[in-house]
Image (tube, rainbow, N blue to C red; front, top):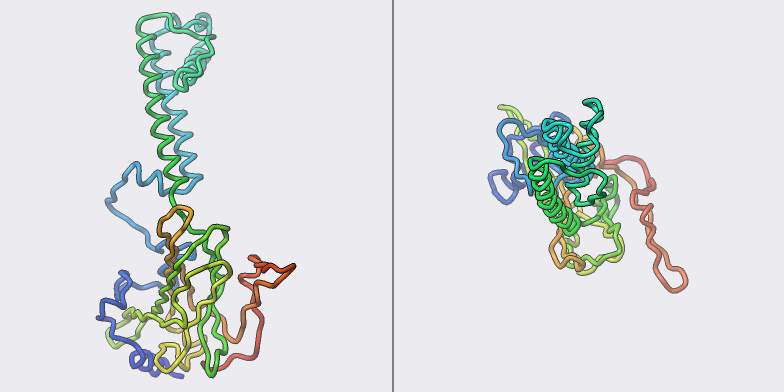
Length: 324
């Protein structure tokens, strides 16, 4: 099939891109250059440059755990180093046990005293000896109380923030379905909590080749079932490839030529947190396999159903490549 024929076929089978309901907010001018719009973890594949706003609370709640713990540790060390430097500037007579030591030993002596004061541990081995040192130690302890109160609140917010642990299959597949074919992928809840009223929205995007250049198109793909009330097992989402589908009579090579990407949005209600949760992901054209089927993930044993989470990505071949 020629590229122009493929493009014309897509245009016949798709709603015009000017329809706002087709655009997910990415715009029809965005290009990928072989990349993707949505990363596998649901984040946008966009690098933000220029002036941005850094909100302390929001950023500390949303950043990754390694970065959060690293920043907290860095702040803990720097704030105590600053107080230690101020104690050191007051001279060896400001704290007990500093006299007769060199500059480095005096600084470390003051540093560990600041930590004891900052954390309100107060071993008693080091004590302030001057009025200035007493005032500085009081401010050190006050700063420590405020810092730990704020850190505790942010730590609680991070733990209390609902996050769905829904995992997507590594690949989507184009496989025989009823009298035709379908696009399928599946998801599973890695946690044992209840997520109810799950809804799914699947959108196909591709680059339309025109005389003036490339333009990105979006088309929502109808699903056999776009919602489930309960989610105890895996859920295989199925898009029947009918004559109205932009995938109709297209093979995987045709799909790759236009840098096709399947964008998935899943939303549900988490009973543990009593809040709505959502996850996003996508499948690039390189992650769409043909003529394969998903292996079954569950079986019965001793009157119960066993769900094998490790088989989420397992597929098996059913025949040679062909037109869809």
